[in-house]
Length: 525
Image 1 (cartoon, rainbow, N blue to C red):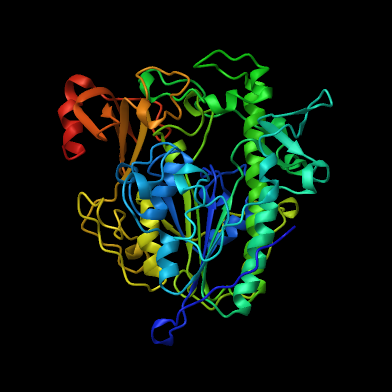
Image 2: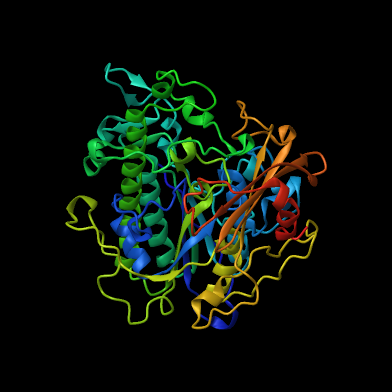
């Protein structure tokens, strides 16, 4: 494998002050199915260990539950309504404004900035370059084995190779004898070793692919989850009062050969129970595989003597439905699609004592006797991924970002996210109510083939969702993709779920005759 040589000019750091490194771990499609988030099935000992030394936000939410819009949002500190990235087909610098990014800000302040794996969504939405050279000191690294992810590498019962959804593999038999996330871990460790030798402060973003579909992972991880022990989702039926516009018909998994063989009706299915269990089993196995990669990376940070000098942030771009509400994948405003893990490890701040010698020791998921749930510093308020930019900047001691005015298309550097720094101090008092906002576009009132991911020009309706400590409220209103304007007088549907009585969001209690005007007031309209 040819590796890129690093040659980075690092400007003098102001005042000669030693800066903290930053390791940002971004996981694709990871919901809060982790031991540290109370999941009693999933084995995630290495992420759980990270959580035990971190501030852990238990109610963090993406601003749109799909890859490119979410990643552009939290990497620029702007909401999708400002980036105008609702699909995969536009680059924000050309499409909305020349907004600075989180890694770009660190690069401009003397850091070596590096990208490994899927950080920005590849393609048009990051200018086919992962926003290089604006954001990165060297060209972003993508694993060579990535190109096989959606090809026929899944051995079926017939002995033939297929492009399946469920795809446990013998790594020794796949092309190149490796998998993308394994290569990303190896390259990340190589880069850290190199920049350490150069005595340069670094900002390294590592984007792991799993548990994104297809569920292509080393088959030995299935041993952790015997299929006979896998249950269905607690609420596998489509909610009775769910507006049709809110439903996503999971078209991406329908394209896989093993799902096509089931001959499932469109748009509601359902998927047969035995295959539902296979999907859930494979998702959990993918998470444990991911956890093993995170564990190896964290162990390397410790072994290189950088655990005292490196801020570590772990987040996901959005969640993923595993049969809840009769839905699969992301593409909705439900908590299961928008809620994400969010962990911040800050040496000397989230650790109240001297860093333990055994911190980030790799934990083998196959050799853990009990699933301990190590307790970190838990924060339960709703928070947003759009807050990542100002928060990481603040934790690193860089000059704070100004809040964006409205509108802010003409301003290169500002943030629409509120910094989470108050949660890192003894006092958490804030004059503003903690609220997380999400949006999701639809092309029609009823599910159709492009409902999950409509192109910008096909968007006719926008779902604006507000998550507080007590409820989730969603309004589906008319939307004009030419002017980027929502018409809040054109209400197509409404949803209201109270967290205390309906934590799974199964019972829409919105009453049109009573709540229309109240809903608009709750959105400040």
